[in-house]
Amino acid sequence: MSQKNRTLIPPAPPEKSKPKGKFKKSGHLADQQLKYDYPKSSDPQGDLFSQLLPETLNTLDKYKVDKAEIVEGIKLSPSEQKVIDCLSKILHEKSQHIDPKKPSYYTGNQTPDIIKYGSEDAIAPKLAFTLYELTKEYKGGDYVSGKDIENVRQVLQDLDSRRFLYSYIETTKTETGGRIERKIEDFKKLIHILKMSETEYSQEDVEIRRYEETIILLNPIFSRQIDSKFILYPNDIHKRTMIAYGSWNISDIALRLRDYLVREISSKHYSPEIYLDKLYYMVAEKWMKESRKGKVKEYLQKAIETCEALGIIESYETKTGATGAPLMVFTLNKSWE
Image 1 (cartoon, one colour):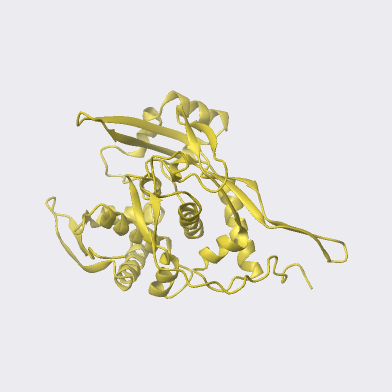
Image 2 (image 1 turned 180 degrees about the vertical axis):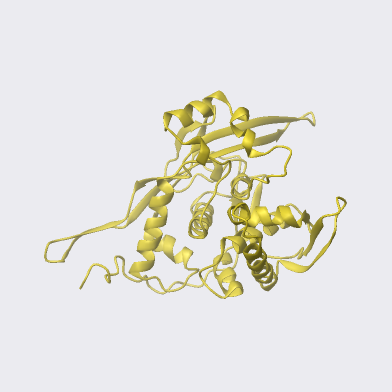
């Protein structure tokens, strides 16, 4: 049997049906994923480096980063977005997520690490799972092949090789009714692979050793303030999105629109308004900067239809905004789950 066709991890036994439920995803993580650079903004990313903290600039110099290629936020491919969502779900399921006052709250199923996070020390959740388990989530519960597992392995390895520049404010309310704002800024990986599933074979192609467990250290952003700032997703969101889109090859635009609208629902904003040009940049910044607006319009329409099929959008319309520019107004399903 060739290595290409070999299933590294055998199919799991039939699973008992799980009750439908939801999982929390960090609101800060979602915000960073949805960040975009709008060129007409009064605060463009062109001034980005003049706004960064000295510690962040030192980190960029340390890694010899080409500053011309740096953008703020977490820019992911559709496959990477799905894997990050799966890791958020696994973190929810494998953590103590009932009592936020306990130190084990959203820290994973392994002893977490304390790492440097911006200018302070922070808890980094640690997860142990099998690649089969992660791929099963990625496939929405469908059949998992050896090729599927290898694809997810590659996505994890690609994520482990990349760092992202993020900057945001964590707000904490005080007992007197005021608030404390803490700026978090860093240039750091989202995940760090500590151990990876693997199977060793002899020259005769006979399996010698199998190590199925994968251990990953997550960036603290996965759990920071997740008790108060989070987005709720149904456990079967991947399966439902695939069905609504009509394919597993879901576009980046459809995923970003879905996540933007679900974030609005989580914030109890059921009639969000956004200027159409800004919406184009939020869902397809790269294409807009390449002057491919026609393509963006086509894919955005497909994304809207997907969110309608998911039951997120009840209706939408385009009207003239206060500036005279087209404004997109969504009416969202208050009871979506």
